[in-house]
Image (spheres, rainbow, N blue to C red):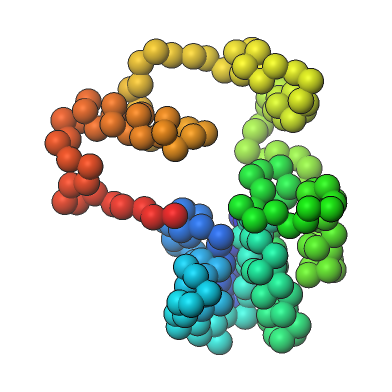
Length: 212
């Protein structure tokens, strides 16, 4: 989804990506794509009392709200208003419900996936559903990925059993870049890796600090 939007630059458009997190911004910036967070784009601080300068987006004719399903109702309303106020721009949204939900729930009355898709249909009347994973070339791997997704989202199945059937486990950590589900596990792994790298403090000169 995001790759297709980035291709618009090759067609001569000035594209701006608006992301819900700093990490997504960094990933896009590493790929040479101009990106800002939704807070920066709309001039929102970390609280209602704090205001920041809104980004001047006048030079961009394409605005992509990347992983828009991670936005809460406040920002979704701002995105809808922005679309209505800028009919001269091509405004796109990427994302899906098969990821973490917004920190603030979209609704306490309706099932998340259904309600989120309903909101997106209002903001973005035209939509495209991509169902084929282009990152995998092997048909067997594509089928395995679909089966893994089904099993992980099936609450009647043991998650640990599913993981053991599909992934290798190790008692040693030899990689510098790792992914964890919980913050406390992330801290433990980070401390372990830093000890192996002979680092003496939490942060050292020359390291890149990413804040979310």
